[in-house]
Length: 500
Image 1 (cartoon, one colour):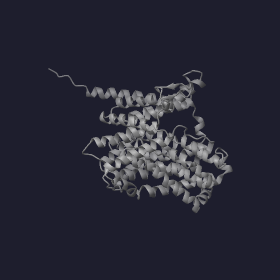
Image 2 (tube, helix red, strand yellow):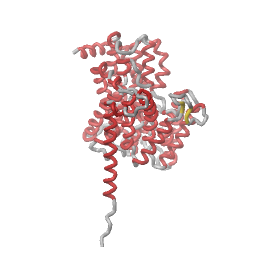
Image 3 (cartoon, helix red, strand yellow):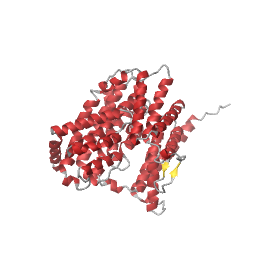
Image 4 (cartoon, helix red, strand yellow):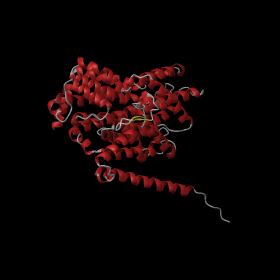
């Protein structure tokens, strides 16, 4: 009853006309940010952070939070319609874009919108009832546990790839190698920079995502004279009852996965989308369709993406630890306003904590309206002829890439990966495993080194800790099962010798 009383108090704060206005502004800006290639919530919040000095504390935090989780809604649009993703919508390019090629753009966008609403709702329930308790879950994970968790992510390659497993593993390895470019965080030694100063901080995720997906797809469309654009302007939003029944289970699974991974430092929407996609590809009744334009491939990742974005506030507000770069900016906004996130925040600033939680319920409703009934108006820009549209898309890709570090070299890096991505498409290689390897590789290396330092080089630490030992055991069982399944299939395909 205390939780319900506190939530009612939070709604009293969130439903003032001033906070409603800031919530609507944040959700609208976040959706627009999601639609524009490359311009993610990190860059937008960085730009708008100085404005919070002149905005009341509650309104400023509500607006910045709305930008963050609103962008998770909007970024699916460009990924589904044009195969131009943000970091948190990479997986949406797989089945979402395939649905667009089949003329099911409206169904894909409806699925993403409704699934995001479900994911946000489940995550807010978790945030409301379990924030103080779940915030302590992050303390249970040590470096060895995170290392094992990253290895579980690599196991997902067999589910994420739409081609052969061998090609998927090769692309994942390329991603891991790309993630090693830059300065070694332990020794400070440059690695694989080829003496280019702009590579000292490594290759940007935005540059690789926009190059391998966005620019590569534009180049492919220009190369194909018969297919200028997959989007024809026809939007049929309402699914059949049978299609809607396929959305709900996948969205609920993605919501649970995203809600859990959003709590863990280093998790968040990027990892959650891959995990949800892998689970759907394994347990869904329609798993044989995933990868070629299935509703489940859009619903699960959209729900996980949105759920992880909401629950990533738990480590920040409950224990005072930001779990990603956007949460670090949110922490800066808290501190600018004289609020110290952490265990005492709920007791010292109940109006801010419960007001922010209640505003997420309000923002979820705003975003459902913005992204489902009004999606046809958001997409009116894509009715422009492709010969006019693609230079604009390239322009926004360049702006988005430049805005991350304000560095022109990033634009040239994006162009290089655009060419590489085009070659991948011509060779029928799926870039999604490359992104998975690029994201997880540096995290795996960092936690692996940290675990060995703490255990003084004793590898047994990975197996003696309960969490890491359990995860590694599950990985071993999965690998053995996959190898056995491979040999079983090979035996069935072996030709039977002819008898005399």
